[in-house]
Image 1 (cartoon, helix red, strand yellow):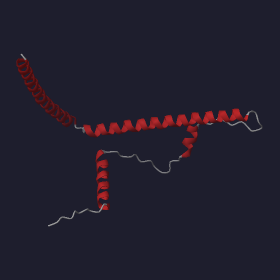
Image 2 (image 1 turned 90 degrees about the vertical axis):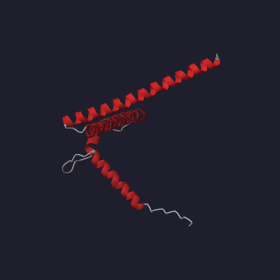
Image 3 (image 1 turned 120 degrees about the vertical axis):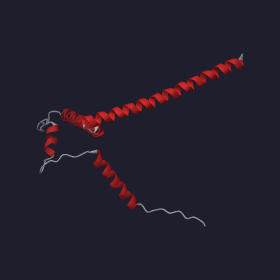
Image 4 (image 1 turned 90 degrees about the horizontal axis):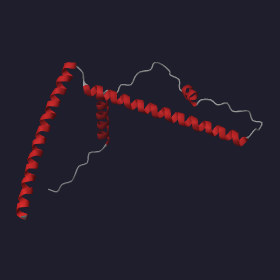
Length: 152
């Protein structure tokens, strides 16, 4: 009985392995068909999907960064206002003049002045790859070549 159970389980495992192989083959065929469809669509529309996706991803990252900076500025403004209120409460009604509340965003906006024409930064994938390659060449040039000694 134990031998029969072992044979039954072995045959089931073989069947499952065959099914897995068939599914993997089907997946590779589907992946190839999807890749072909992608290339044909890209050709007919005349666009570079990877470039557009990278541009959109950079745009999303910049928007998140701007949102984070805005939240940090608001938090800093809130903390400053709380500090001013606390110092007014501790000083009481002394002969010091009242401090006028000023928004920190206005101060930050006045901190930088644009001189000359602004130029947009390019974040194309080709430029980034070229800059990385240049940096790699510079690093390689700086590092001395290490040679191993071999006995003959």
